[in-house]
Amino acid sequence: MPKVGEQIAALPMRWDDDGNLKVLMVTSRDTGRWVMPKGWEMDGKKPWAAAEIEALEEAGAKGFISHDCIGSYSYKKKLGQKHWILCEVRVYPMIVEKLKRNWKERHQRKRKWFTPKAAAKRVKESELADLLMTLASKPKKEPIIRELLKKAS
Image (cartoon, rainbow, N blue to C red):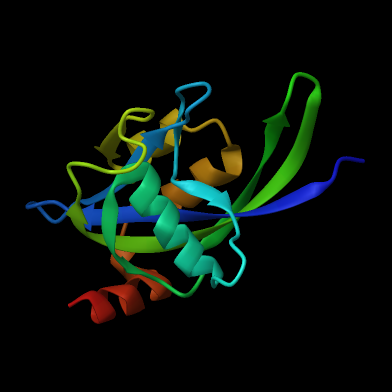
């Protein structure tokens, strides 16, 4: 039985001028597929604070992050040639206030805004696609997002 790793992710989001929700995705460094900014928990940091750091380092995104997880998904993380572990990723929504032009991993990743539906079609993990699809209609009705919007305004 493989070991289970625990990771955290930020779900950077914004509303466009027409009031449509967009989510910011980044490419993974190894395969170039679309993912959310994510990583391992950090010693001495709350999980949402670690997710906020990942969003800044991987996507150059700054803003307001929820202290509440909006959902989770699992995936197999490759470690070397023949080794992998199952990772459980907790997702923290984040309202993006600013995208930095220069950020730590800008030469290793691309970033792009997608509708939740378009993002769901591009991710490999079905649980993550399901989570994104829950935001495709009436995302402001999600209690965690509603609370986050209050803090951001």
